[in-house]
Length: 168
Image 1 (tube, rainbow, N blue to C red):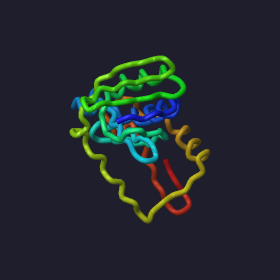
Image 2 (cartoon, rainbow, N blue to C red):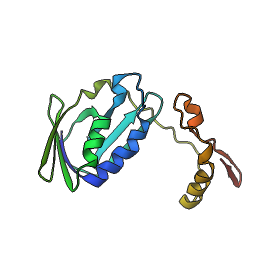
Image 3 (cartoon, helix red, strand yellow):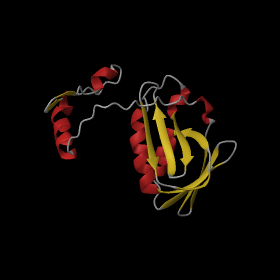
């Protein structure tokens, strides 16, 4: 696998998917980020077994492939890079990461054990809400959200939708 990507684009993607990583993973496979190439760029996926976050990052793909890299280590490295980043991962899942004179090697693993992300079922039900109003509503209730991840249900927000009203 070989691709080139803008450092700020892949940093934004890693920042997003790393929200699915657990502080205390139950299995080693949950410590990684799955990197998959596609025609339109690369897909990054992280999971903790309960929640999965996947995003697409624009990239120039030279050679297709799939690999899993240690998410926290890769994220820390990428945050320090700028400009164009060139990433090549060989058949033994060894990554060579180059950017502006910097050259780093990192060991990855086979992605075959990475769990498949569940398909999101589309329904006829949908809600449209302006981004500013959604942000305002969430910011008003964030004080009540727990930061203790041992009881994950308390780290979320209940959203009730009825005709003409959305309640958080």
